[in-house]
Amino acid sequence: MMDFIPSQRPGESRELSSVDRDLERYLREEFGYSGTQLAYVLRDLKILLKREKLKTRELETAYQQMLRYAEDLRKSYLHERRQREQLIQSQRATAITLAKAIEKRDRYTGGHTDRVTEYAKLTAKLLDWPEERLAVLELAGHLHDVGKIGVPDAVLNKPGKLTVEEFEMMKAHPEIGEQIIRGIDFLEALVPYVLYHHERYDGKGYPKGLSGEAIPIEGRLLAVSDTFDAMTSSRPYRKQLDPERAIEEIKRCSGTQFDPNIVVVFLEIWRAGLLDPILLGTSPLPPDPAS
Ligand SMILES: [Fe+2]
Image 1 (tube, rainbow, N blue to C red):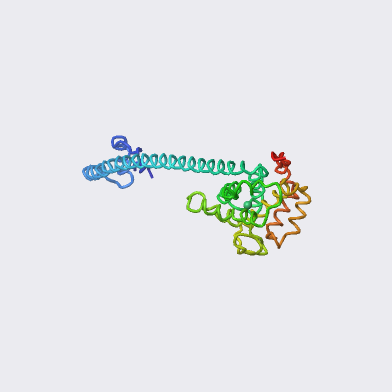
Image 2: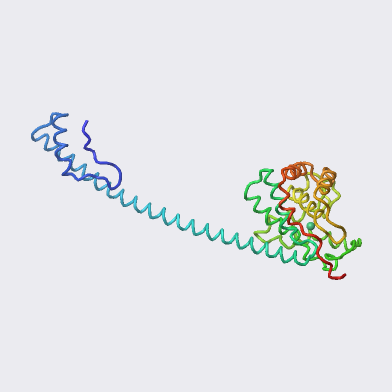
């Protein structure tokens, strides 16, 4: 069969004159039209084709308009996404700057938050946490001790053992931290890390004394990384432990201080040697200005 029907696609309608001859031949050969009958049929078909052409033109206009709308939509989506990314970047930078400023007050814990963040991220990755959750964890790793802002310098930097009273002041830092970040939109998700990173699996931790799975996973995960770094860094009251000794301590405290499932994962990243490059950043005890 001959193809004389114009294309339906916008912008591809054919001129009537270009199909006249084909059409006439087709009507003669296929339907046996001739003379006046052929003239009528031809006329009607031409009217139909003209309408088709007009419809095609309308379709083309609508199609072009739709393309413009789609382009506008795409541009505004990209603009909004860029703005959102810039906002997230600046929030992140603000939070990390704040964390660094806090850390500067504590001469014994230089680089602590960087290392804790790295240890915790390795653990979370092995637990298959999604990217979004890892992004929150990264901020939390840096800001988990934000509440130390409310602990007096004399307590924070005391070169000896803390008295019971001083230790109580130190123990207030998770709740002070929670009060600082609660209500700040982009920091709200950090609360489980800030508030629960000193809870213990056996319920003997602080500030709430929660135990087992009642402690949010964020707190249980961060507790292992935080303690490992505390043990492998020098503190006012003791020298740093060798990583091997610190790992033995983590194992010994599995099920009492720490969630055994998190310990299993932490041991796995230790055995794989993934902690080593981070451990290289562990600095020795800085000189005591008071001595
Ligand atoms: Fe802490």
